[in-house]
Image (cartoon, rainbow, N blue to C red; front, side):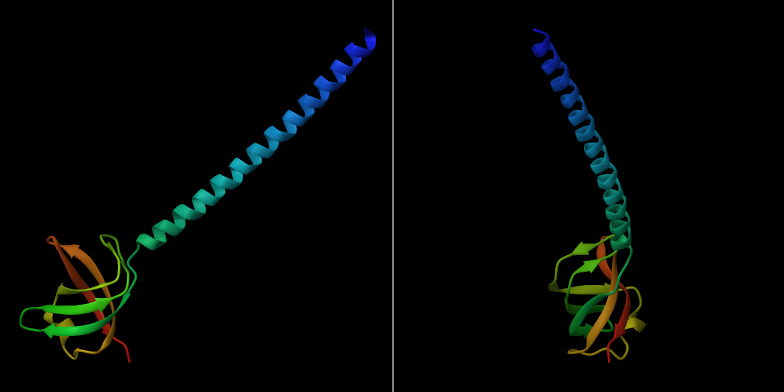
Length: 125
């Protein structure tokens, strides 16, 4: 009887140590997950900031203040768009001076008055 009781005490002690180690490991993992989440959130914030997108000019309409671009992904404060070819309004017709079909460009775009609008445009050399 004493042997059985002793074995139970030893087994209970072993289980307690094992569970404590497991719990510590789990909490350690949660701390890592939280740190990873903070990193992911800061990366998401930087992804939300406006970055210049790449594009190729298909057509330019200076009088109509618009341009047609075949563009890569666009990420800005108000837009997240997959690559496609589409027309854009521009905030200022001056952005279109010196731009012609076939030019490679970098640009930023935002939703302004319910339209996707180019806010900056630079021809790549």
